[in-house]
Image (cartoon, rainbow, N blue to C red; front, side):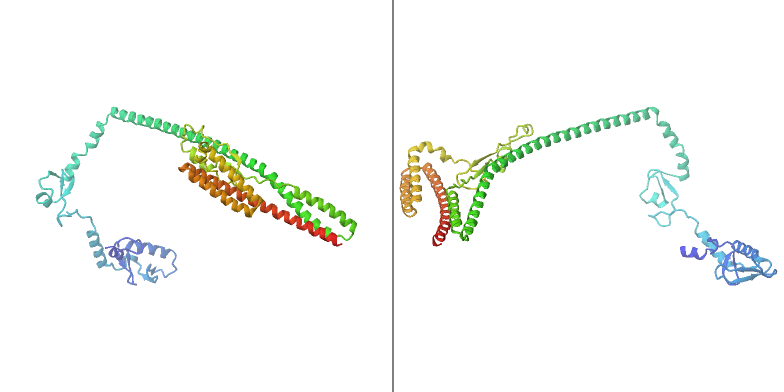
Length: 428
Protein backbone atom coordinates (compact mmCIF):
# COMPACT_ATOMS: atom_id res chain seq x y z
CA UNK A 1 0.00 0.00 0.00
CA UNK A 2 2.88 2.35 0.66
CA UNK A 3 4.30 1.86 -2.84
CA UNK A 4 0.82 2.38 -4.34
CA UNK A 5 0.40 5.63 -2.41
CA UNK A 6 3.79 6.76 -3.71
CA UNK A 7 2.65 6.13 -7.30
CA UNK A 8 -0.55 8.09 -6.65
CA UNK A 9 1.33 11.10 -5.26
CA UNK A 10 1.99 14.29 -7.22
CA UNK A 11 5.73 15.08 -7.50
CA UNK A 12 5.04 18.82 -7.02
CA UNK A 13 2.78 18.98 -3.94
CA UNK A 14 3.57 15.48 -2.63
CA UNK A 15 -0.11 14.74 -2.05
CA UNK A 16 -2.58 12.42 -3.72
CA UNK A 17 -3.48 13.58 -7.19
CA UNK A 18 -6.31 16.15 -7.27
CA UNK A 19 -7.87 16.52 -10.74
CA UNK A 20 -4.81 15.07 -12.52
CA UNK A 21 -3.94 16.57 -15.92
CA UNK A 22 -1.56 15.15 -18.56
CA UNK A 23 1.09 17.30 -20.21
CA UNK A 24 2.12 16.76 -23.84
CA UNK A 25 5.21 14.95 -22.51
CA UNK A 26 2.80 12.36 -20.95
CA UNK A 27 3.60 13.31 -17.30
CA UNK A 28 0.67 13.88 -14.95
CA UNK A 29 0.34 16.56 -12.27
CA UNK A 30 -2.42 18.17 -10.24
CA UNK A 31 -4.37 20.92 -11.98
CA UNK A 32 -3.61 23.45 -9.24
CA UNK A 33 0.12 22.58 -9.34
CA UNK A 34 0.23 23.15 -13.11
CA UNK A 35 -1.59 26.48 -12.78
CA UNK A 36 0.98 27.68 -10.24
CA UNK A 37 3.83 26.60 -12.51
CA UNK A 38 2.18 28.31 -15.52
CA UNK A 39 1.80 31.56 -13.63
CA UNK A 40 5.49 31.59 -12.65
CA UNK A 41 6.56 30.76 -16.22
CA UNK A 42 4.36 33.50 -17.74
CA UNK A 43 5.87 36.22 -15.49
CA UNK A 44 9.42 35.54 -16.74
CA UNK A 45 8.61 34.41 -20.32
CA UNK A 46 9.46 36.15 -23.63
CA UNK A 47 7.43 33.59 -25.56
CA UNK A 48 4.93 34.33 -28.21
CA UNK A 49 1.81 35.89 -26.68
CA UNK A 50 -0.58 33.37 -28.21
CA UNK A 51 1.24 30.40 -26.67
CA UNK A 52 1.81 29.68 -22.98
CA UNK A 53 5.11 27.88 -22.29
CA UNK A 54 5.54 25.55 -19.27
CA UNK A 55 8.46 23.39 -18.22
CA UNK A 56 7.65 19.86 -17.11
CA UNK A 57 8.83 19.42 -13.46
CA UNK A 58 9.68 15.82 -14.19
CA UNK A 59 11.55 15.71 -17.52
CA UNK A 60 12.38 19.49 -17.70
CA UNK A 61 11.10 19.75 -21.30
CA UNK A 62 9.32 22.97 -22.33
CA UNK A 63 5.86 22.49 -23.78
CA UNK A 64 3.34 25.00 -25.16
CA UNK A 65 -0.19 25.30 -23.88
CA UNK A 66 -3.10 26.84 -25.77
CA UNK A 67 -4.36 30.27 -24.69
CA UNK A 68 -6.99 28.68 -22.42
CA UNK A 69 -4.18 27.31 -20.24
CA UNK A 70 -4.37 24.23 -18.01
CA UNK A 71 -8.08 23.71 -18.65
CA UNK A 72 -7.21 22.70 -22.21
CA UNK A 73 -5.05 19.79 -20.96
CA UNK A 74 -6.71 16.39 -20.98
CA UNK A 75 -7.73 14.90 -17.60
CA UNK A 76 -6.25 11.53 -16.53
CA UNK A 77 -9.58 9.80 -15.83
CA UNK A 78 -8.11 6.40 -15.01
CA UNK A 79 -5.72 7.85 -12.45
CA UNK A 80 -8.51 9.89 -10.89
CA UNK A 81 -10.62 6.75 -10.45
CA UNK A 82 -7.73 4.86 -8.88
CA UNK A 83 -7.11 7.71 -6.42
CA UNK A 84 -10.79 7.85 -5.43
CA UNK A 85 -10.91 4.09 -4.85
CA UNK A 86 -7.70 4.22 -2.84
CA UNK A 87 -9.15 6.94 -0.64
CA UNK A 88 -12.29 4.89 -0.01
CA UNK A 89 -10.31 1.79 0.89
CA UNK A 90 -8.07 3.76 3.23
CA UNK A 91 -10.94 4.91 5.45
CA UNK A 92 -10.81 3.34 8.97
CA UNK A 93 -12.95 0.26 9.41
CA UNK A 94 -14.70 -1.01 12.48
CA UNK A 95 -12.42 -3.31 14.52
CA UNK A 96 -13.03 -7.03 14.18
CA UNK A 97 -12.76 -9.75 16.81
CA UNK A 98 -9.39 -11.45 16.96
CA UNK A 99 -10.88 -14.69 18.25
CA UNK A 100 -13.74 -14.83 15.74
CA UNK A 101 -12.55 -13.70 12.33
CA UNK A 102 -14.52 -10.95 10.54
CA UNK A 103 -16.93 -10.53 13.46
CA UNK A 104 -17.31 -6.83 14.36
CA UNK A 105 -16.80 -5.72 17.92
CA UNK A 106 -20.17 -4.06 18.41
CA UNK A 107 -20.97 -4.84 22.10
CA UNK A 108 -19.40 -3.72 25.38
CA UNK A 109 -18.88 -6.31 28.12
CA UNK A 110 -19.57 -4.55 31.42
CA UNK A 111 -17.88 -7.26 33.52
CA UNK A 112 -14.59 -7.38 31.55
CA UNK A 113 -14.75 -3.75 30.34
CA UNK A 114 -13.92 -4.51 26.70
CA UNK A 115 -15.57 -4.71 23.27
CA UNK A 116 -16.81 -8.15 22.18
CA UNK A 117 -18.58 -9.66 19.21
CA UNK A 118 -21.81 -11.63 19.14
CA UNK A 119 -20.05 -15.02 19.08
CA UNK A 120 -18.04 -14.03 22.17
CA UNK A 121 -21.33 -13.38 24.00
CA UNK A 122 -23.15 -16.51 22.84
CA UNK A 123 -20.49 -19.24 22.60
CA UNK A 124 -17.26 -17.51 23.66
CA UNK A 125 -15.59 -16.77 26.97
CA UNK A 126 -17.94 -13.85 27.65
CA UNK A 127 -21.03 -16.06 27.68
CA UNK A 128 -23.52 -14.84 30.28
CA UNK A 129 -21.73 -11.58 31.00
CA UNK A 130 -23.77 -8.36 31.21
CA UNK A 131 -23.41 -6.23 28.10
CA UNK A 132 -24.23 -2.69 27.13
CA UNK A 133 -23.89 -0.30 24.26
CA UNK A 134 -20.48 1.41 24.25
CA UNK A 135 -21.90 4.88 23.80
CA UNK A 136 -24.53 4.32 26.51
CA UNK A 137 -21.91 3.11 28.94
CA UNK A 138 -19.81 6.14 28.11
CA UNK A 139 -22.69 8.53 28.81
CA UNK A 140 -23.57 6.74 32.03
CA UNK A 141 -20.01 6.90 33.42
CA UNK A 142 -19.37 10.44 32.20
CA UNK A 143 -20.20 11.96 35.60
CA UNK A 144 -18.33 9.35 37.63
CA UNK A 145 -14.99 11.24 37.85
CA UNK A 146 -16.72 14.30 39.31
CA UNK A 147 -18.49 12.16 41.92
CA UNK A 148 -15.23 10.48 42.87
CA UNK A 149 -13.48 13.83 43.23
CA UNK A 150 -16.25 14.99 45.53
CA UNK A 151 -15.53 12.07 47.86
CA UNK A 152 -11.98 13.33 48.43
CA UNK A 153 -12.50 15.40 51.60
CA UNK A 154 -10.24 18.01 53.14
CA UNK A 155 -9.82 15.87 56.25
CA UNK A 156 -8.23 13.08 54.25
CA UNK A 157 -5.88 15.53 52.60
CA UNK A 158 -4.80 17.00 55.95
CA UNK A 159 -4.18 13.50 57.33
CA UNK A 160 -2.04 12.58 54.34
CA UNK A 161 -0.04 15.81 54.62
CA UNK A 162 0.45 15.34 58.35
CA UNK A 163 1.62 11.78 57.86
CA UNK A 164 4.05 12.92 55.17
CA UNK A 165 5.53 15.56 57.49
CA UNK A 166 5.81 13.02 60.30
CA UNK A 167 7.65 10.58 58.06
CA UNK A 168 10.01 13.32 56.90
CA UNK A 169 10.78 14.24 60.51
CA UNK A 170 11.42 10.62 61.45
CA UNK A 171 13.74 10.20 58.50
CA UNK A 172 15.64 13.35 59.47
CA UNK A 173 15.96 12.09 63.05
CA UNK A 174 17.33 8.72 61.90
CA UNK A 175 19.75 10.45 59.53
CA UNK A 176 21.02 12.60 62.41
CA UNK A 177 21.53 9.49 64.56
CA UNK A 178 23.44 7.80 61.76
CA UNK A 179 25.64 10.87 61.27
CA UNK A 180 26.39 10.92 65.00
CA UNK A 181 27.22 7.20 64.96
CA UNK A 182 29.49 7.73 61.96
CA UNK A 183 31.36 10.43 63.87
CA UNK A 184 31.65 8.17 66.92
CA UNK A 185 33.03 5.34 64.80
CA UNK A 186 35.58 7.61 63.17
CA UNK A 187 36.64 9.06 66.51
CA UNK A 188 36.89 5.60 68.10
CA UNK A 189 39.11 4.18 65.39
CA UNK A 190 41.19 7.37 65.24
CA UNK A 191 41.88 6.97 68.96
CA UNK A 192 42.84 3.33 68.39
CA UNK A 193 45.19 4.37 65.62
CA UNK A 194 46.75 6.99 67.90
CA UNK A 195 47.31 4.42 70.66
CA UNK A 196 48.80 1.94 68.21
CA UNK A 197 50.99 4.68 66.76
CA UNK A 198 52.28 5.54 70.26
CA UNK A 199 53.00 1.88 71.01
CA UNK A 200 54.76 1.51 67.68
CA UNK A 201 56.83 4.65 68.32
CA UNK A 202 57.75 3.42 71.81
CA UNK A 203 58.86 0.06 70.43
CA UNK A 204 60.88 1.75 67.68
CA UNK A 205 62.50 4.04 70.24
CA UNK A 206 63.44 0.99 72.31
CA UNK A 207 65.00 -0.54 69.20
CA UNK A 208 66.87 2.71 68.53
CA UNK A 209 68.22 2.69 72.08
CA UNK A 210 69.32 -0.91 71.63
CA UNK A 211 71.00 0.04 68.35
CA UNK A 212 72.82 2.88 70.14
CA UNK A 213 73.95 0.46 72.83
CA UNK A 214 75.22 -1.96 70.19
CA UNK A 215 77.09 0.84 68.46
CA UNK A 216 78.59 2.03 71.77
CA UNK A 217 79.76 -1.51 72.46
CA UNK A 218 81.17 -2.46 69.08
CA UNK A 219 82.42 0.83 67.64
CA UNK A 220 85.35 1.26 70.10
CA UNK A 221 86.39 -2.33 69.56
CA UNK A 222 86.19 -1.98 65.79
CA UNK A 223 88.17 1.25 66.00
CA UNK A 224 90.85 -0.47 68.12
CA UNK A 225 91.07 -3.39 65.71
CA UNK A 226 91.41 -1.02 62.76
CA UNK A 227 94.22 0.80 64.57
CA UNK A 228 95.98 -2.52 65.14
CA UNK A 229 95.57 -3.36 61.47
CA UNK A 230 97.00 0.02 60.47
CA UNK A 231 99.87 -0.39 62.95
CA UNK A 232 100.76 -3.79 61.51
CA UNK A 233 100.65 -2.43 57.97
CA UNK A 234 102.89 0.44 59.07
CA UNK A 235 105.30 -2.04 60.63
CA UNK A 236 105.45 -4.07 57.45
CA UNK A 237 106.10 -0.92 55.43
CA UNK A 238 108.71 0.24 57.96
CA UNK A 239 110.43 -3.14 57.79
CA UNK A 240 110.71 -2.88 54.03
CA UNK A 241 112.17 0.63 54.29
CA UNK A 242 114.67 -0.53 56.93
CA UNK A 243 115.84 -3.28 54.63
CA UNK A 244 116.58 -0.74 51.92
CA UNK A 245 118.67 1.51 54.21
CA UNK A 246 122.34 1.65 53.18
CA UNK A 247 123.84 3.71 55.99
CA UNK A 248 124.93 1.39 58.86
CA UNK A 249 124.34 3.98 61.57
CA UNK A 250 120.94 4.94 60.31
CA UNK A 251 120.11 1.30 59.71
CA UNK A 252 120.99 0.31 63.28
CA UNK A 253 118.93 3.18 64.66
CA UNK A 254 115.97 2.25 62.52
CA UNK A 255 116.28 -1.41 63.46
CA UNK A 256 116.27 -0.43 67.11
CA UNK A 257 113.14 1.66 66.66
CA UNK A 258 111.54 -1.02 64.55
CA UNK A 259 112.32 -3.65 67.23
CA UNK A 260 110.76 -1.51 69.94
CA UNK A 261 107.61 -0.98 67.92
CA UNK A 262 107.35 -4.66 67.05
CA UNK A 263 107.78 -5.68 70.68
CA UNK A 264 105.22 -3.12 71.76
CA UNK A 265 102.81 -4.32 69.06
CA UNK A 266 103.27 -7.95 70.14
CA UNK A 267 102.68 -7.03 73.79
CA UNK A 268 99.55 -5.09 72.92
CA UNK A 269 96.61 -7.32 73.93
CA UNK A 270 93.88 -7.93 71.41
CA UNK A 271 90.45 -6.65 72.42
CA UNK A 272 88.23 -9.41 73.58
CA UNK A 273 85.46 -10.30 71.20
CA UNK A 274 82.06 -9.34 72.52
CA UNK A 275 79.03 -11.08 71.08
CA UNK A 276 75.81 -9.38 72.12
CA UNK A 277 72.36 -10.87 72.07
CA UNK A 278 69.38 -8.53 71.73
CA UNK A 279 66.52 -9.72 73.89
CA UNK A 280 63.63 -10.05 73.65
CA UNK A 281 63.16 -10.50 69.92
CA UNK A 282 60.19 -8.66 68.42
CA UNK A 283 58.41 -11.58 66.74
CA UNK A 284 58.51 -13.83 69.79
CA UNK A 285 57.62 -11.00 72.18
CA UNK A 286 54.65 -9.78 70.15
CA UNK A 287 53.36 -13.31 69.60
CA UNK A 288 53.65 -14.07 73.29
CA UNK A 289 52.29 -10.85 74.84
CA UNK A 290 50.05 -9.08 72.33
CA UNK A 291 47.42 -11.71 71.41
CA UNK A 292 45.89 -11.31 74.88
CA UNK A 293 45.67 -7.52 74.56
CA UNK A 294 42.09 -6.25 74.29
CA UNK A 295 40.88 -2.91 73.04
CA UNK A 296 40.12 -1.72 76.56
CA UNK A 297 43.64 -2.64 77.73
CA UNK A 298 45.43 -1.31 74.67
CA UNK A 299 46.90 1.59 76.63
CA UNK A 300 48.47 -0.91 79.04
CA UNK A 301 49.85 -3.12 76.25
CA UNK A 302 53.46 -4.00 77.10
CA UNK A 303 56.43 -2.58 75.26
CA UNK A 304 59.65 -4.43 76.08
CA UNK A 305 62.79 -2.87 77.44
CA UNK A 306 65.44 -4.26 75.15
CA UNK A 307 68.78 -5.30 76.55
CA UNK A 308 72.02 -6.30 74.85
CA UNK A 309 73.90 -8.95 76.84
CA UNK A 310 76.97 -10.96 76.05
CA UNK A 311 76.48 -14.44 74.67
CA UNK A 312 78.75 -17.18 75.85
CA UNK A 313 78.57 -19.18 72.64
CA UNK A 314 80.36 -16.62 70.48
CA UNK A 315 77.43 -16.23 68.08
CA UNK A 316 76.27 -12.93 66.72
CA UNK A 317 73.34 -11.52 68.62
CA UNK A 318 70.84 -11.76 65.83
CA UNK A 319 68.68 -14.51 67.20
CA UNK A 320 66.82 -14.49 70.47
CA UNK A 321 68.45 -16.57 73.17
CA UNK A 322 66.47 -19.70 73.88
CA UNK A 323 64.73 -19.85 77.21
CA UNK A 324 66.74 -21.31 80.04
CA UNK A 325 66.11 -25.06 80.08
CA UNK A 326 64.63 -26.61 83.17
CA UNK A 327 67.86 -28.57 83.62
CA UNK A 328 69.60 -25.47 84.98
CA UNK A 329 67.08 -25.34 87.80
CA UNK A 330 68.10 -28.86 88.73
CA UNK A 331 71.74 -27.96 89.29
CA UNK A 332 70.86 -27.29 92.88
CA UNK A 333 69.94 -30.95 93.23
CA UNK A 334 73.31 -32.07 91.85
CA UNK A 335 75.82 -29.68 93.46
CA UNK A 336 78.51 -32.31 94.20
CA UNK A 337 78.22 -33.82 90.74
CA UNK A 338 78.30 -30.39 89.11
CA UNK A 339 81.43 -29.41 91.00
CA UNK A 340 83.22 -32.57 89.93
CA UNK A 341 82.17 -32.11 86.30
CA UNK A 342 83.24 -28.46 86.25
CA UNK A 343 86.64 -29.37 87.73
CA UNK A 344 87.05 -32.01 85.04
CA UNK A 345 86.26 -29.50 82.31
CA UNK A 346 88.85 -27.06 83.66
CA UNK A 347 91.47 -29.78 83.74
CA UNK A 348 90.61 -30.73 80.18
CA UNK A 349 91.00 -27.14 78.92
CA UNK A 350 94.34 -26.73 80.73
CA UNK A 351 95.67 -29.95 79.20
CA UNK A 352 94.59 -28.92 75.73
CA UNK A 353 96.26 -25.54 76.08
CA UNK A 354 99.57 -26.88 77.42
CA UNK A 355 99.93 -29.95 75.23
CA UNK A 356 97.50 -30.45 72.34
CA UNK A 357 98.57 -34.01 71.64
CA UNK A 358 98.77 -35.26 75.19
CA UNK A 359 95.87 -33.11 76.20
CA UNK A 360 93.70 -34.83 73.64
CA UNK A 361 94.31 -38.25 75.18
CA UNK A 362 93.82 -36.82 78.62
CA UNK A 363 90.64 -35.15 77.42
CA UNK A 364 89.27 -38.43 76.13
CA UNK A 365 90.13 -40.04 79.45
CA UNK A 366 88.39 -37.29 81.40
CA UNK A 367 85.38 -37.48 79.12
CA UNK A 368 85.18 -41.22 79.64
CA UNK A 369 85.38 -40.76 83.41
CA UNK A 370 82.69 -38.12 83.29
CA UNK A 371 80.63 -40.42 81.12
CA UNK A 372 80.91 -43.16 83.69
CA UNK A 373 79.92 -40.69 86.38
CA UNK A 374 76.89 -39.67 84.33
CA UNK A 375 75.93 -43.30 83.82
CA UNK A 376 76.03 -43.85 87.56
CA UNK A 377 73.31 -41.26 87.93
CA UNK A 378 69.84 -42.15 86.78
CA UNK A 379 66.98 -40.22 85.27
CA UNK A 380 66.41 -37.62 82.62
CA UNK A 381 67.77 -34.91 84.96
CA UNK A 382 71.36 -36.14 84.73
CA UNK A 383 71.10 -36.68 80.97
CA UNK A 384 69.99 -33.11 80.35
CA UNK A 385 72.70 -31.70 82.64
CA UNK A 386 75.35 -33.83 80.95
CA UNK A 387 74.23 -32.74 77.48
CA UNK A 388 74.43 -29.09 78.52
CA UNK A 389 77.91 -29.54 79.98
CA UNK A 390 79.12 -31.35 76.89
CA UNK A 391 77.82 -28.57 74.60
CA UNK A 392 79.40 -25.84 76.72
CA UNK A 393 82.68 -27.72 76.83
CA UNK A 394 82.78 -28.12 73.07
CA UNK A 395 82.00 -24.47 72.47
CA UNK A 396 84.62 -23.27 74.96
CA UNK A 397 87.22 -25.57 73.44
CA UNK A 398 86.45 -24.32 69.93
CA UNK A 399 86.71 -20.68 71.06
CA UNK A 400 90.03 -21.30 72.82
CA UNK A 401 91.36 -23.09 69.76
CA UNK A 402 90.38 -20.21 67.48
CA UNK A 403 92.00 -17.63 69.71
CA UNK A 404 95.14 -19.73 70.09
CA UNK A 405 95.50 -20.24 66.34
CA UNK A 406 95.08 -16.54 65.62
CA UNK A 407 97.63 -15.56 68.24
CA UNK A 408 100.06 -18.19 67.00
CA UNK A 409 99.81 -17.01 63.39
CA UNK A 410 100.31 -13.38 64.38
CA UNK A 411 103.24 -14.26 66.64
CA UNK A 412 104.95 -16.35 63.97
CA UNK A 413 104.53 -13.65 61.36
CA UNK A 414 106.03 -10.93 63.54
CA UNK A 415 108.89 -13.16 64.66
CA UNK A 416 109.69 -14.05 61.06
CA UNK A 417 109.82 -10.43 60.03
CA UNK A 418 112.01 -9.46 62.98
CA UNK A 419 114.33 -12.41 62.34
CA UNK A 420 114.67 -11.44 58.69
CA UNK A 421 115.56 -7.91 59.61
CA UNK A 422 118.09 -9.00 62.23
CA UNK A 423 119.64 -11.41 59.75
CA UNK A 424 119.95 -8.69 57.17
CA UNK A 425 121.57 -6.30 59.64
CA UNK A 426 124.01 -8.97 60.84
CA UNK A 427 125.10 -9.85 57.32
CA UNK A 428 125.85 -6.22 56.59
